[in-house]
Amino acid sequence: MNDNDPIVLAMQVKEIVQALELKVYSGEEGLDREVSGAYVSDLLSDVMGHADTGQLWITLQTHKNVMAIASLKDLAAVILVAGHKPAENTVEQSNEEGIPILGTLLSNFEISGRLYELIKNR
Amino acid sequence: MHFEYNIEGGDFTRAGYASSQVKKLLKKQGVEMSVIKRTVVAAYEAEVNVVAHAYGGVMYVDLDDRQMRIVLQDTGPGIEDIQQAMEEGYSTASDAVREMGFGAGMGLSNMKKNAHELNIESEVGKGTRVEIIMQIA
Amino acid sequence: MLVKEIIEVLDARLLCGEERQDYGVEVAFASDLMSDVLTLKDDHVLLITGLANMQTIRTAEMSDIHCVVFARNKKVSPEMIELARENDIILIECRYSMFKTCGLLYGSGLKAIY
Image (tube, rainbow over all chains, first blue to last red; front, side, top):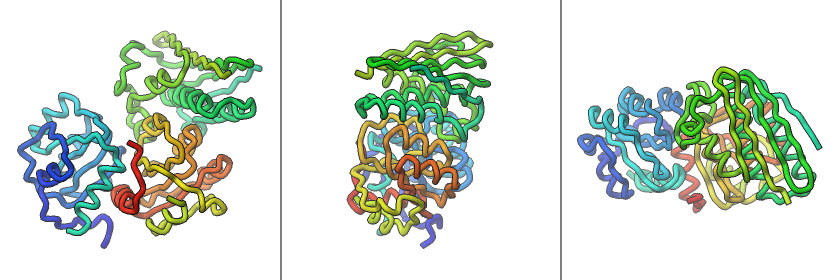
């Protein structure tokens, strides 16, 4: 399996929210978006260049451009790690775009590890 | 003992050289590992700040048996509002600096958390002076 | 988890530190933000990152991190390897995404920092 191939998981954002006990900050309308996989990165240009449609973006970046990139790349949702909270204008943008911003207290490594366990057999 | 290291603004390949020298110096003095780490993390963040924001600067290091005093004096744009700059997440870093893995607004708070004493003075349009004082014994 | 086990699990390439493959890491941390790495207090940390430049090595040096995995097939320069050697830092190059790298190591029992 190519690492970056879009995979059909037949899994929606809300199922992952439930399984990993994620907090939903905004963009509730997008909770039934289909998830194709996940991409972990804190570098915006890297996500612009390499993330694929439908992926969950795991990051500790709360930079104002995060939602712009999520929207351009048509990502399923953004997961902010380590208790990072989105800024007010990011929340607004997330609601407008219908792309959820989710949160966890776990680190990049641990939430990725758990999510990988969850989807590897799908 | 007194040492001076030049820091080139914008030169990210060499950023950290001065802090690396500080680490070697403290190791040679037999300073406790946890204190060495706190010192060099504060010094390194300060050094990266000079590289990221200023045209250039100098790191002055003074060491005696009990204390290390590190002063970074730069020529550069200065800091308009130091209080605001200290807030975690606040940053004026360019996109280029962010792509280097810095500029997420954690530098000054990292310095504050690690330094035993931190003093910052700045004049807009002139430059910034950062003083880090560490008790090493 | 030992360096040689990490290399096997990730089907990765060791760039320097050949003689220290029995070095063991206790916890892992994945980040591209160096200021974030500089906040860590733990010992025997494995750093997983997609940021491959001189500052990655400098940050490992300042944080007493002795093993770094570069994910996303990032290419490491000879200058980086030289600086890593000087500071006893083991460098590993891995072609997987950061997500898959974390997934495989977590699945092999490596613990997170917090």
